[in-house]
Length: 145
Image (tube, rainbow, N blue to C red; front, side, top):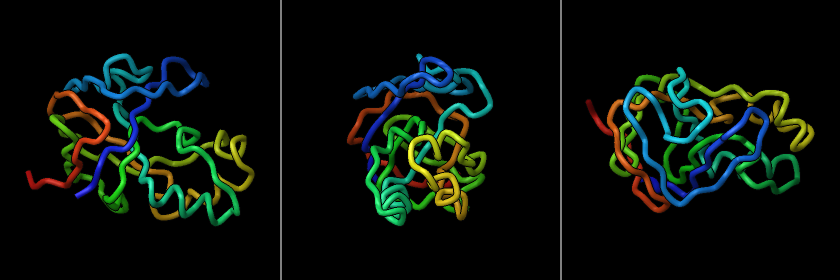
């Protein structure tokens, strides 16, 4: 079982990632108050362990908010999770695919884009299939449909 370590909202394109302790998540729409609310990639997720390993491979430390994802999970492997359903707090997220790192990663740390490019290192994205509230510290686990 994993754990939700952080939640961020993106309120504007290229804007800062705002940390919050809790958020409402709506089925078919995403995280209330997030820039991509209602879009295809309703929630983006990064694996804390993979983030630390890959940033560390560059001899650096970097706050995971630089990844620009909405959720930071620890203790769950996102690799190959397309089509799986993730329970986080009260909500359920169906993973749609791998999140590919963009040029913003190299702006944060030279070489980071390449370091995140293989094997789901950039995280995953998904659509919300069951609404609910999420709170930092919530359990996160894969569930069977």
